Length: 290
Ligand code: CO
Image (cartoon, rainbow, N blue to C red; front, side, top):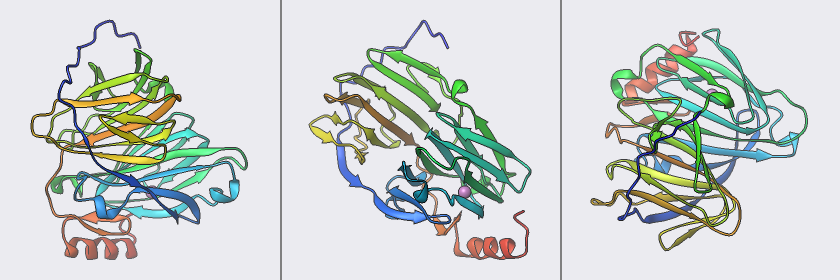
């Protein structure tokens, strides 16, 4: 895409880092080894985000079993593949192949059953899965799904930073997906050594940065690789300023507007009340999610 005009961001009062978080090694699906970066203890603080998993391995034993059929209800899953190929199939008849640099955005709504299975027996598999909550009024909406190949993700390069705009907008470039109430911003940033990136952001939005190559600084805080920096919601801040270190650096910058609604989770179901969770389990057992 060729964008000739950019709004000039002015971030003279930038957010600071509230805390750094190291992910927890875990396994999910049929034994896929991954790092849970955003765990459920952070769901309230990082509302509307419920989970972020990072997976990355050259060893097929860590990923080959994939995620066989499993249900979801009440939120959205956004899978971003950096390397490797994953086949997605769901009970609504959708099927897609997610590969290098592509995104799969799935709105579970009232429910889907799907599988996410590697389509390779060797080589590197690397990517992320983010869970984004749905507003109470949308939790039982129809499921929706979109496969976004790498070439359809809007990007631009500026001052040594390549910006891939998965959701929201950056420097006047709208991303591949927009959502009204949660207003997700999802950027994948590739920074040359020493490069600086600014992003304006409403101080009410919850935001975090996850570094997956190299390292960067936010204000006085160094954020090393494989760490999440949770950003303070300063009342009079204008946005975020990232400064890459001496290595080529890659990071996800994710932000969203909090829903401020009750969060009730039981595994792959995220609703507002315990009764709604029990209903979800019952509907799944009775085959009503398929
Ligand atoms: Co799933």
